[in-house]
Length: 378
Image 1 (cartoon, rainbow, N blue to C red):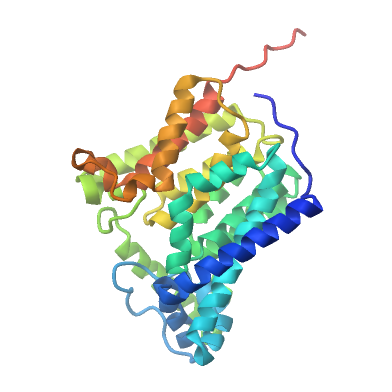
Image 2: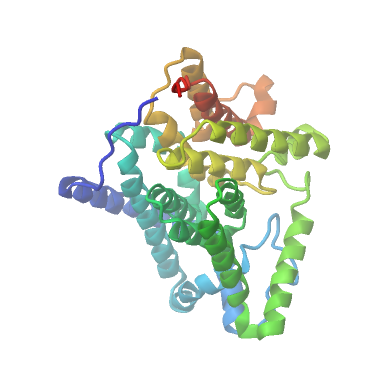
């Protein structure tokens, strides 16, 4: 497939339009986040404990796990604002996430010849994206970092790309699987930067407790997280959720995860890292979500780069187009608005997992089935 001619930057008119749309969207999601926003409120409690020098990781919250240690420090300014007004702190967090979404769209514009593929890509992750603002989670921030990493990898700024991925890993953990992609591509500078940034931020955030207790705090978080995320314990929208919802044995889930990674490696062998950064990072992000021990529905916002990759190059196969349509219906969450027939309960319960699997299959197929150039005679 030929790569579309991409816009290097937004025109002034496009920039103004994006800002206006961002303001309008913020006006919608800020009241929703103030009324709900349970994830953010819960994590603010951890930041408040850090500010007061109290232990952080004695037990997990109800029905989930704490965000990684770096977020406790990162949310400290919002915790200070919340001492005066929790509603204002929530509004500020919502504005930050809207800004991150806007940055993601502005960066992704370089990979498309128009706005239609971006609009369709946003629609394909519609409910996961909106769910972020209802719970005031942080996936739009992760999305901006992942898209920025793809842009820097395309520009051969490997060190900065690795730093973005390391920051994303420090914020949420599972984006660290993107470091495996950097290792596969032998982008050692990016890999070293990602490991250094992720490790330094994770341990450094706990240094207010002292060097030794900082290491202990990180160890306690890892212990609590691993205990809560063993396969089958949570109804998560990753492959691990098949054990919880469908009763699959853990060994089957592990085998499926390995198969996804193997299929992705086959696709990457037929991809050009110099020209296909958004495709490769998008595929790696989808695989990371599927392989993560925990993936709530809003994690599928990170399928956005994968959707940009396939929508900017319309598939020539009708079978692949049909597969993408089904995947888009699932990852958008459209059927979760009471549209599932009862007999499709096994799809309904793991709706986003099935959508992620189909999107991964489509991404792999788009490379495996494309014709390869004939070898030149020597």
